Length: 561
Ligand SMILES: Nc1ncnc2c1ncn2[C@@H]1O[C@H](COP(=O)(O)OP(=O)(O)OP(=O)(O)O)[C@@H](O)[C@H]1O
Image 1 (cartoon, rainbow, N blue to C red):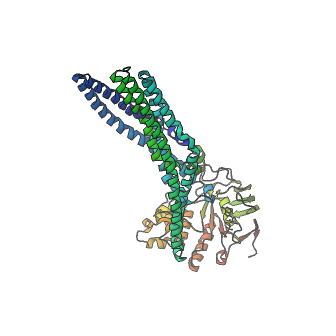
Image 2: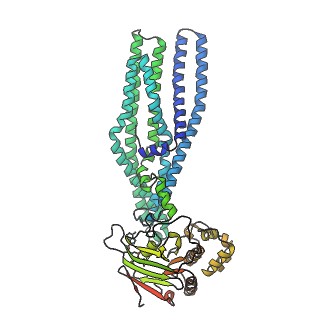
Image 3: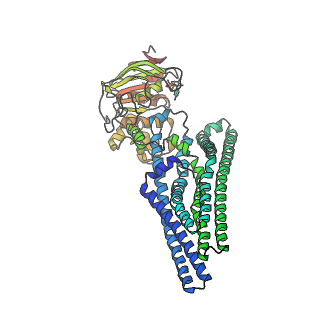
């Protein structure tokens, strides 16, 4: 018997479903026991030549079979309900934990691995939760009863059955650690294959252009082979577990049968008792056989449990919910977001960054050191600096995606909140859905607002020129739009968010000269009633910008340009 504590805790969160599923399973077992008694009665009635009893026993057997069919259907449905609820809860928790800013900088997490965990990993736990756990409860509730009954009828047979049950339950624990190790190997191989596959699909154009498609195929083949070997190793251990249980079951039944027959041969037991012992000894192991079957069916899925724990699927709800609601890390420099206080349309005069220092976990040096910055409403503030100087890191700190080691960020003297700031990143992300869906991520804008924001971002005419205008479908990651269109849509989206601070990373990098000039002009206009900070290297984007700050060795200086 293998106890996976995390899954037991999850199943216990649905006591009604667990109790229903277990109770019905025990009732199904009771029908088997009742049938054994009825069969024993029928056989002794046949031997004693009593046709009335034979008919009654046969009718009883048929009735029991019908009752079992109904109970089994109910049990299957209850078990599926329990498994489904636990899966839903695990997935919800893992998704909440995945949608926190810290994950943005979790360089160890790969999208394909997360997808594998959320999909197959969560589904893989179903057999254990919906079948194995009720089966364990059934063993613990029903086996002692049957053993007690057997001990009353034939103490020797009862002892044989009890010994068989104990061996079947405890035997497999001997190689629990080996199972855990091989299980981990298996899931690691599966995650690695999923992650490589997703990355290869996304990077197919690059791989093709570099002529590395055969190499990629080979790498994926090697991953696939490693997974096959890991699966075989896991299944071998699982089969060994099944073999021990089968041995214990067969040995227990044979020993109990030998004891019963010995009694019968010496004339110590009447026929009905001998039949009963033979039949009950077999039925006593039914829950054990079920346990073994469910274990074998669900074992591969269990290898996902450590991966799911890493994803946060077992992390208490209140922890992840708090973070998700904040939209920022637990310890945002501002003191954290206050849900429901979005600064929509609110104006602010000055964003102040004081003495900000930050170092990535495990890095040798600070990226930013005692950095201070003041950006005001009314005119654009630009930040320039060498590649790797820390410009994006500064943005992530302002957005609350990273937590500074020291320093403060304030807006008009109060701590800044994540919902004070909108951002247009260098490679904006668009989602599968319509143009309108993509623009309305932060609310439900009026048609006139949509048009105004798109006009300001220089994308309105293009949207109107699309086959279905704002209702045109955007492919995943905006794949059916040009880089420039994506960037301008993202700018319109940020304008619609109506936040008092707008951060823009390289707003003109994907635009031709004319479009770039239009967008810069828009930013100047937007900066009249918002605080706008722009990262840019392009001289034409910096033309007319009053405040240009150069980020160098973790400090900001007024740029000489
Ligand atoms: N998740 C991370 N973990 C560890 N180090 C990181 C991480 N992200 C960035 N860095 C390091 O922090 C430094 C600053 O990176 P950042 O992306 O902020 O630079 P940047 O000025 O925006 O560069 P670019 O102009 O090329 O976009 C770099 O040395 C980079 O290697």
